[in-house]
Amino acid sequence: MLSNVATGAATGSFLTLLLPPFVTDVTGQPWRVGVIFAALSLAAAVGPWVGAVVDRTRTHRVALTGSIAAMAAAYALLAIDAAVEWYSPLFGLLLGAAWATQGTIGPALIVGSPDPAAVTARRLTVYSLAYPAGVLFGAVIVAVSLALGVEPGAIFLVCALTLAGFAMVTWATAGPISRSLAASDTARPTTDREYATKSTVQRGQVTAFAAFLAVVFLSSLGSNGLVSQLANIMPAVYGFTPVATALLVGIAGLLNIATLILAGRAMARSTSMRVFTVGTVIRGVGALAMALIGLITSPVLILAALAMLVAYQGIPIPRLAAPDLAARLETRSPTRANGYYFASSALGSALGCVAAGLAAMSGYESVLWLASVAGLAASATALIWLPRAYR
Image 1 (cartoon, rainbow, N blue to C red):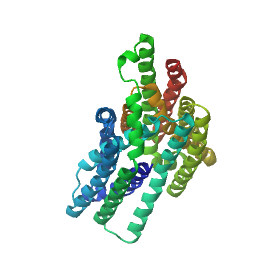
Image 2 (image 1 turned 60 degrees about the vertical axis):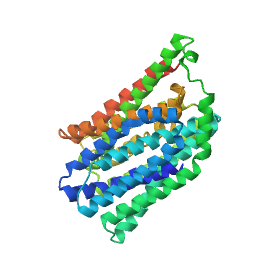
Image 3 (image 1 turned 180 degrees about the horizontal axis):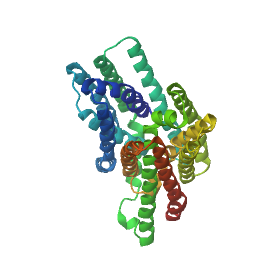
Image 4 (image 1 turned 90 degrees about the vertical axis):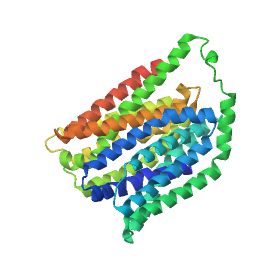
């Protein structure tokens, strides 16, 4: 749980609030910020490899702690860069790989433990809520530092020390659940013989997991493409001011907390498959509503705001259910399953950000339709192909 607080601070606040202005000031080329974010997403595709290595070596606790320590090292590297007024792209690669490792190991520790489904649902809910808590924690650190006039290099050093503290706490608290997962893995059937008694069962598992990864990829492509251009879309398409856009994003974030709590309760009573599918459809419908409202010559602002809020509520719901669903579909290894999930999401995000940037060249409405098509394709896959393969 605490590792996800650290990740929220590192990737949701420190990264988004500090990196763009720093890189722009040092390089004088704002477009390099986009390249860095794309490189970060590509580096995050190491999840499957991380899962395979950790499974073989049984080093879940070491890997989880090391991921937070690597985030601290990435910001220490930025502090050095600031001292010499130079930027190293190694930061993006290091942070992306660390993020993928934490995103692979953290959920696997929860869904891989032999606990009842209701317990797993509650833990995944708290784990998901830990990320926005980290975003808030990190934002406060950045805001206070900037208000005090702290130099960028010193702020990066504060970030590094904060994350190093989280790494130590993660090591101190992750032992029991890591040992529980190792014991569960020992009891879990790992030979192909136990899964191949009927060839149709084995083929069904592969097909269902492929369908799941396809939904994740398409959803991430559309959603992250939309979010990457949201600050431009809301004023250009609907006429919102930048301040109103920021307030809407803040409201959406607050609603995400309530949405996660409700979705967690629903998953405890229902299944991760159903919650994942509902969230995917909500995301696609929200993007489609935004695109349709954008066609109106004088769009009604309240309708545009509601459509945006709906689209934003579709983001955390699938993320809540995905780790458990991935582990159920790829039954031999929850760690490796979540590695593939994280990699699929990261690749979709990288492609979505690039595609949205290209689409924006012909108008920001094009970005909305890109997100709509990707969201509807993900919804169709989740409603038609995934349940059939799952059964």
